Image 1 (cartoon, rainbow, N blue to C red):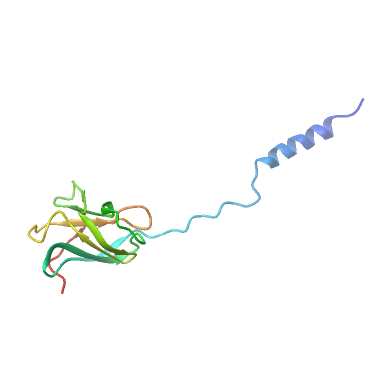
Image 2 (image 1 turned 135 degrees about the horizontal axis):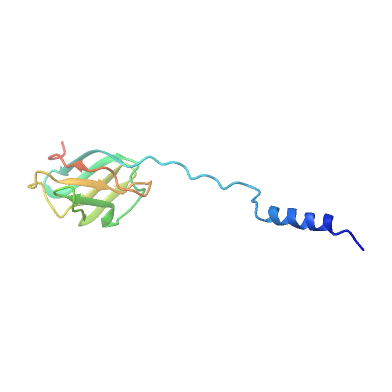
Length: 124
């Protein structure tokens, strides 16, 4: 009769190795959150805001990538996005320059919205 201990141990070792991966998965690169450095209305266009900063979504025309609030609690999407880049958005908002406390947030490369930023007057 044949000794089955070596065969059984080989089967167990191969079973453990089948669950192991040869290479660890590559970690996703850490992307900083989107940061707004300025937001102001475009001269002569009381509903168009130009937002600058860094780490914004690369390219988008999705209205939900720029959201706006009057009180910091209720957020609404922009009416439209006319230009976007990793460092800027130009968006038409549902509220205009006549609203003194208008806050915006933008969607970033990290998949999250930026911190709220107060829209401040007209572009210079």
